[in-house]
Image 1 (cartoon, rainbow, N blue to C red):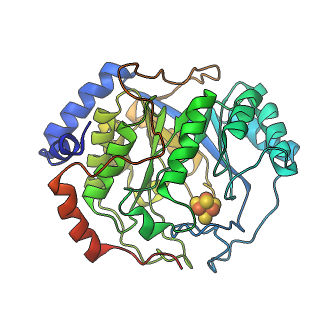
Image 2 (cartoon, protein in one colour; image 1 turned 90 degrees about the horizontal axis):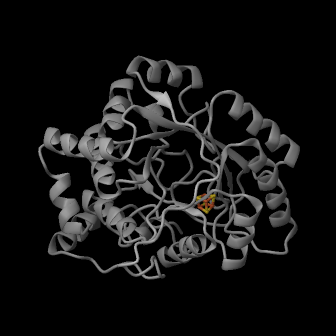
Length: 356
Ligand code: SF4
């Protein structure tokens, strides 16, 4: 979908938008299923990068200490516990700029992946930048999906991160696609961006070929000590609209209601599910932020008549559309409309300071 199409959808009367999103959702997904994913930080803090929202950057005084990579058996214990509590996807995150083949830390990660992949859950990792070789090794070791978010629009991105570029991110995503892993890629709302920035982010995701297998939509949880600690919260209806547009634009992707669920009421979360969110992080801790308690989540899902999705560890990544060029190829598409240009002015007024 183009920016114009996304823009038109987003600004429909809410009930029209929800009706369309629901129709698309039910045409592609079991209506009442939700994927339960557990996220574990296998290496916390001390990251060299300057992502303005992140408590794990070593550049900010956030109180998050730099930890070491967890031992394989300790990760396995957590993965087994996640499986026992009903999780079907185990996502492991490490606070690094990236990983390089032939290093000890990468070998240790591969060992962890090999172990977790034997548990019958889908295995997702997020380790920062990857080259083609690293991506192939992760795939061989048993990774189902690689998470690498684009965070926001290409235009707003330099206000948020300066230590690596938007195109660096696209390049990693391309390596993941070429290695035959599913791409898990979305962004964060609440970074001082405009609605147009959020739609531009979706436009970039729509340009991926193969399409992303899952699209996490995170709401910023402002972290004390980061440049975005004072960022304004995102309105629930804005979040619902974005999820609905993502559902229509990327019908076969799981849309994950990710960080920020603790800021939503159960009614707000329910609207997000109705709009097309069909995946959540499950468990009481995200990388460094809190998450609703697992029992609380299960109670809510039960009250809504929703059931956990079964795992599909052998899933193939979404196929590429042969009629379109493969992408991303390292370049973000150009701004499509005058509306996006108008958004840039608004962006100027509302932008956050770039990290130093
Ligand atoms: S988001 Fe990732 S790359 Fe950026 S500072 Fe945090 S851990 Fe590092």
